[in-house]
Amino acid sequence: MPNLYTNLEIPQLKISLKQPLGLFINNEFCPSSDGETIETVNPTTGEPITSFQAANETDVDKAVKAARAAFENVWSKTSSEQRGIYLSNLLKLIEEEKDTLAAIETLDAGKPFHSNAKEDLTQILQLTRYFAGSVDKFNKGSTIPLTFEKFAYTLKVPFGVVAQIVPWNYPLAMACWKLQGALAAGNTVIIKPAENTSLSLLYFATLIKKAGFPPGVVNVLPGHGSVAGQALGTHMDIDKISFTGSTKVGGSVMEASGQSNLKDVTLECGGKSPAIVFEDADLDKAIDWIAAGIFYNSGQNCTANSRVYVQSSIYDKFVKKFKEIAKKDWDVSGKFDPFDEKCIIGPVISSAQYDRIKEFIELGEKEEKLNMFQTSEFPTKKTKGYFIPPTIFTDVPQTSKLLQEEIFGPVLVVSKFENYDDAMKLANDTYYGLASAVFTRDVKKAHMFARDIKAGTVWINSSNDEDVTVPFGGFKMSGIGRELGQSGVDTYLQTKAVHVNLSFDN
Ligand SMILES: NC(=O)C1=CN([C@@H]2O[C@H](COP(=O)(O)OP(=O)(O)OC[C@H]3O[C@@H](n4cnc5c(N)ncnc54)[C@H](O)[C@@H]3O)[C@@H](O)[C@H]2O)C=CC1
Ligand code: BAL
Image (tube, rainbow, N blue to C red; front, side, top):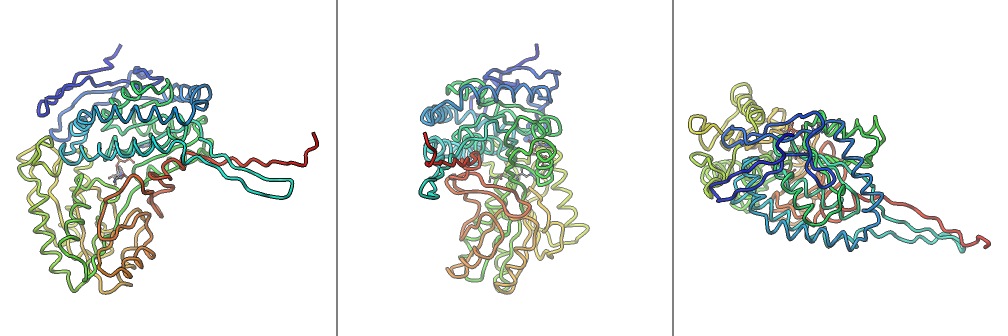
């Protein structure tokens, strides 16, 4: 029998914890059917942390059977009030264990503990509170008068068995965006974390059981995307799938649905979100927001404002000040322990992502010969971690690969525009449409921007300060459907129409 638990020590916080390593099915941790495991690496050191069980097609099938039985026999008959009680129990347990959960994120994903990791947990608490309170509010149908002898009503009903696939940039937060909403709506769930950040969700599974959720309601299946993820996408008894990750894999999830049972699909995919700075903006505040919007979480953020367009009259001033702030507030050098309060930018998630981002930087510097500024050199001699210095390219042409493609690292491209029409043309010139930001004191211009930009989120005089009560999702190739807010429950409900004929003669 393989090890289904290991002890993890986090000396910086004096935390020791019992880390589950198995697949979580029917409220129990179990081994994978073929013994396959995945090693997870600490991105701060490049050293392995531990290995956990990896689900295959057989395990996916087992979890689907558990989720189906739980839905048909228990969960679909559980009152919405009781679902809310389970979610409230969960909220209390997350509150009690928030430091441990944040510490696992720091260890496994490299998130600076005192900022990113703790802030993820703050958001998870907010959204759990929100969804716990939503159970009897967002699932209401309506009545539709038809004729003197006929009317219809609609019921909002859960899909049944839902699969969720989440990425590594906000491992537990992205899981909770999906999980709590699906549970509030009354579905049972099979959720797959990313290969490189499965530990926090496995630990979280212990809280699911403690909160009292019946067996089979939540199943956590770590595993390879190409195996477990693919098997979830093609399974014939999964009613809905929700995915967050790259646009490429999002497309293949949709294809898998089309080639199997046409399960409902929600996708949160990539982005190349623009920030527009007009000459009348509060420049200092705009710079602070934009710097946080690209460097926070080491730029591994689907809504990162990775393209900035600045009006030509203030362009030079913006660039000069932006470099100063990047150097002062976001430099990486000398701060390579994400458990230390001084560490503001953690490593990126993996050597693969490190190489990918470095390739983009080298392309910009050497092939495209762009003007480049880095807050410091790559600290390769000082750390084995995957740390990348904040990098700013200026005067970047619209055709540059760096301006068109999602880099998913602390790399900003800056360009200039002349007037409003020019700015909108450049901002909308992308296949993506996830988010956008505009900085101006002119109310009319701000709302014209909100009207004209093709993106699912618009921030006026701020950036990336999402809120759990506000719907989130993308236009164009950034996704399909919405999460958070009322949409976070709606997306897990389908509408049934009931026609009532009063002319029937008893
Ligand atoms: N929108 C977002 O928040 C995210 C965007 N990305 C983008 O994707 C790029 C590459 O990162 P990756 O880790 O390769 O992302 P990915 O899209 O491969 O991974 C995301 C999730 O999808 C799963 N997955 C992979 N292949 C699958 C398949 N065939 N069927 C079902 N699930 C599958 C993975 O196991 C993981 O859980 C990043 O550089 C970034 O540009 C990555 C993560 C999050
Ligand atoms: N800002 C959280 C959403 C994401 O990056 O996927």
